[in-house]
Image 1 (cartoon, rainbow, N blue to C red):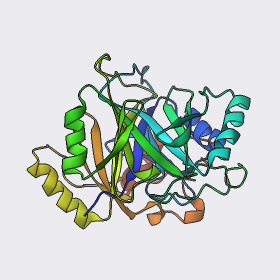
Image 2: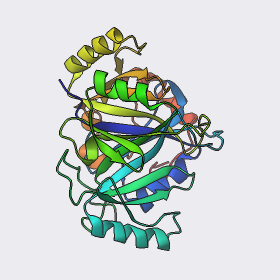
Image 3: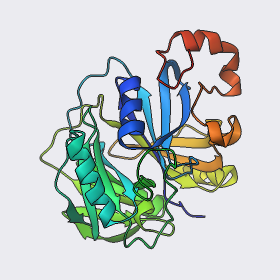
Image 4: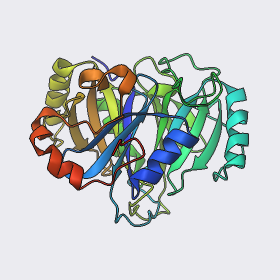
Length: 317
């Protein structure tokens, strides 16, 4: 039994419409599910991913309209990376970001890969990572209808970066409980991997004793989820986490996958999520994300929920 890699990353936006415009029209990701936060149905939960919404490709956003600014610091998921096919694709994005006035940094080598750091309009800290030399977890497939040139699209999630005040306990949870392996250090960051390894299966941890604790808001990350095969494995992971002494959510049915949540000692929220059943459970693959999808247990509240949401451009109304 082994964690397979990154499943998804969930972040916060204050404006779902502008968020949708950036991640689909600028980044060319596919909105594969337009739904609501199951714990607070007044807010959107938007899922952007590859063409088929494969696990390991989902970047999701909760809309919190009154979310304030993020003040970066420790106890945080400080950068989310997105995979692209090769080094040449980074140069394509460098020029595209320049034309579209997207805030970016120069292309640089990091952890033996070419990378391009940039920010979305709310300051979300993002990084494109080249898969040119990747030999680990396979990438997804970029969205054919993105409007981008063939082979230039985003193909999934890359390494997730954590910033902590105390490295040791976070490393211990990831290695001794979740089974990650140490593979090196780059720019004072510890690099851990799991499963087949590679771009889609790494966590990078930076210890910063000079920073205060992050104050999250729009542009911050809420949690990271790691891939497990199925519900049977998830039940076993629940026992392992309980035995290690960590309070947890127990199994939660998110309809598109089953989940379990717990916080590691630096208070970062980890989720374990199953690979299935997937986003085509309640929508045809050709029409993912085109209308508001609600799990069966919320369907009887559809009218009330729809009235509380501001329509996105995808809405027919």
